[in-house]
Amino acid sequence: MWSFVKEGSIRHSREVVMERIAPLQPLNYNQFRWWRTHTDNNKPLGKRAHLIDRIKNGDFEPSSYFWQAQLALYTAKDKFDPKNDDPQKQIEKFAVDFARHKRLMEDFEKEESQRMEALYDAFTSAYQITKSELEEAFLKFSGDILSFYDYAENFLRKTPAENRKNRRGRPPKNEPKF
Image (cartoon, rainbow, N blue to C red; front, side, top):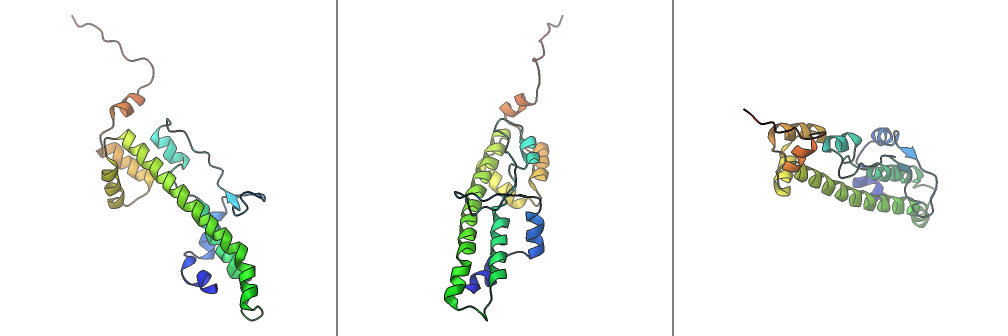
């Protein structure tokens, strides 16, 4: 049981986890989502918003569920006392923390797949690029989403719909030339 917490599940130091949890808002207890302890309070923009606005809003950033899961493992690690407890009592002590970790990781995987699909959809609708070409470009690119957006602005062709989005107001009149 302890090997679950000890060996591979904790991937970051306690300081890094607490640094990532600090900007999040703590949640009150909710009987329907009891495993969630914090929220990032970030409302995603709609699909029709400009890509740069969605990136700056953090719509495509990793969700906070991973960091909450890491915090649950540290909570379980703090409860561990090999000298005073028998194995059955340890399992009882860790049951809530492990269930919390499991559910948070499920939420994380679900949220990440949704965010990646939204990112692929946003880039493929804004630029003339297929999903497979975009995946290759993401793998080759070293940087964050905002710097990839700058790269795409300079080197990828925009779709006709995206070109129309950037114009505001009434289209210019075609004046006759004499």
